[in-house]
Image (cartoon, rainbow, N blue to C red; front, side, top):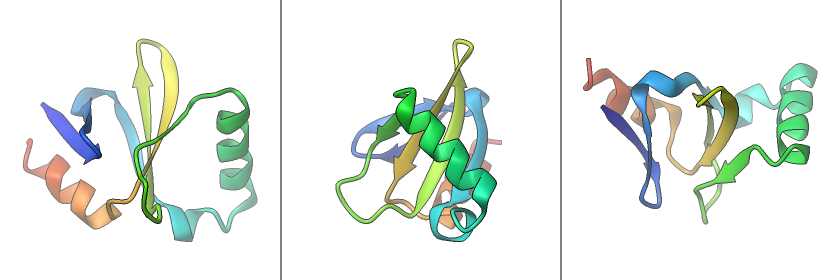
Length: 84
């Protein structure tokens, strides 16, 4: 099944490693470094034209990809839970 992340972008639920609240998690140094490294390595896909609320880490064909979404973690979790 697929989880809609916004702006017509969906990912397979099998590839999702984690769904994180952007505001709460970017306070930590490790998370900031993780996102900065992903950005430098061009592994970030911004699916939002609005204020981002979450980021989703996926493993796609052995490559880690980070999606930035305007959809809240609560909504994404509900979408993921309806799949199971």
